Amino acid sequence: MNLSNLQPAEGSTHNQNKRVGRGEGSGKGGTAARGHKGAKSRSGYSKKIGFEGGQMPLQRRVPKFGFKNINRVEYQGVNLDTLQTLVDNGIVTDSVDFTTLVANRLATKTEVVKILGRGELKAKLKVSAHKFTASAKAAIEAAGGEAIEL
Image 1 (spheres, rainbow, N blue to C red):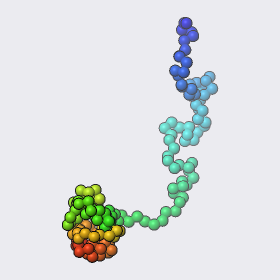
Image 2 (image 1 turned 90 degrees about the horizontal axis):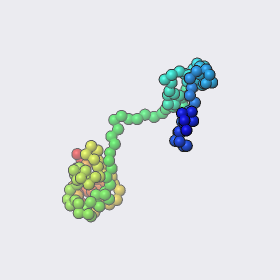
Image 3 (image 1 turned 90 degrees about the vertical axis):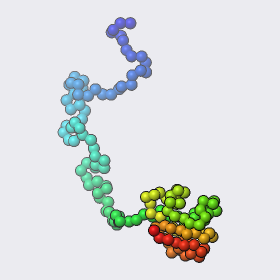
Image 4 (image 1 turned 45 degrees about the horizontal axis):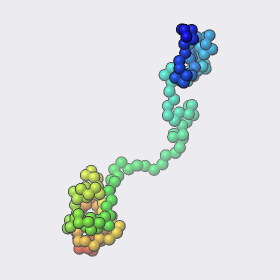
């Protein structure tokens, strides 16, 4: 072994890239295999997401319709059967307020709660929430409870 026949160990190197822009003699000098002119031949070129070569991009061609109401209030719904489950498990006895709902992870402290009418409520509860559906309010009052809007 001498300096003229040194080579890396078998399988230790993986680089098989073209060495472009290293002189005319290499066959990949001059334009460095990028062709002549145009955006792709320039340094620093990166295609924008959705760019279609100057053609009007799809996301601008497709018609938009409707609108998004910026003042929409998104309520966290809690059903009557969920409240009945809390009573059955002995978590609540006479009243359900916002702090109770947050403590039982039925809502987070930043959410606005609406009581919905799915299921039936047998217990007499004093329920306080931000909103009630008509059917939920009727069911709570039919069970002898009270619906208080915050």
